[in-house]
Image 1 (cartoon, rainbow, N blue to C red):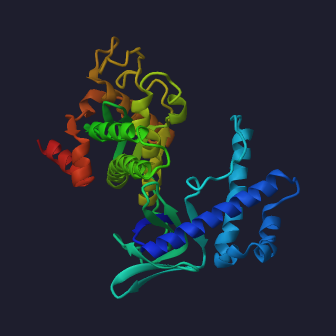
Image 2 (cartoon, rainbow, N blue to C red):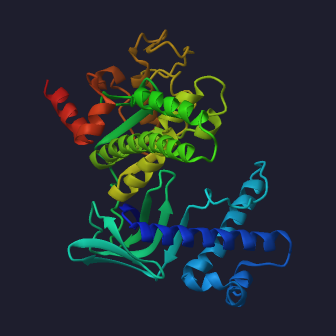
Image 3 (cartoon, helix red, strand yellow):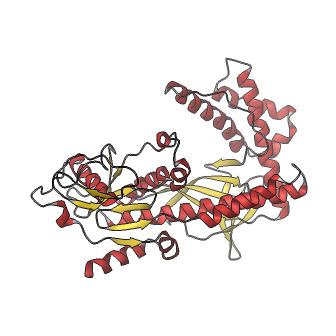
Length: 408
């Protein structure tokens, strides 16, 4: 199984200069081969890689770069080109590959060789060929049965450096149970981020204070002279605000998805077209902030890791249909309760949708359910969990709340 482990680096001033110099040289090489690509129809990826030794003869600075990483720059260019062609074939309007400015080329990758993670006098360091040994904030151990395949070094807009280790773990993927016992359906939203069929409703993450600070710092940046020292200092402050927002949201999504992946044998969710939903005029900011697409991607790979069935369900009519009898009823967005005119079943709007997702997910994998049992008899008492508790305590808080509600 393949994983990425990310660590913060703590380079000295001299090492930061070396990292920046290498990063900028790789950027120039990228732009050089992009120029060759745009002015010749006969270039190929491996043909251009074979040109590197002759280019080093007149471009002396390249002799100070690690050869395999230099080859990866050319591979990166042609990977970007193939993705552009694929998007065009899928009907998307695309442009041309653009030259990279110094602020746009932020990372470079060592593959297979040229790097070593070791412990020196109690300090974990990352040795990079042609650069040196960089101290690492080693906040979690890499599994003993893991093989490090590559290391990507990246400079964030805040000025901090990070290393992402691509590792392969010698561990078989857990088999998914043929007859899952613990199953759950999840409806995601804005007012309540997740409402599941076990009655747990997780509130959305409140980042209003962080957004206000970001807007305040952006206004300060707009009053600075572009390119001045004060502008650069303020730009970093704005970048730190963006990073703070991103990290809090990511932490929340990882803890929430981890809970569902570990606690259940089957997880059914809506297969949302998040990109299409962003095209709507109303409420697009809240949709973007919710990061549903990220949550579903993270949940999917964690379910795969834990041996849990991940069932994406067609979202059509999951809100309209009655979970008890199936009759569809149109509802305005502000109507937060489902009330069926046919059978009289009433429930929270999100709980009703979660049960529709749950039943559809069971049908999709061929697991039946008793239709003789009214869905309302299976509805537990709602357990509200705030996003703040999920972040501060971690995903176990959900389990504790659910156990407490069941005992009551």
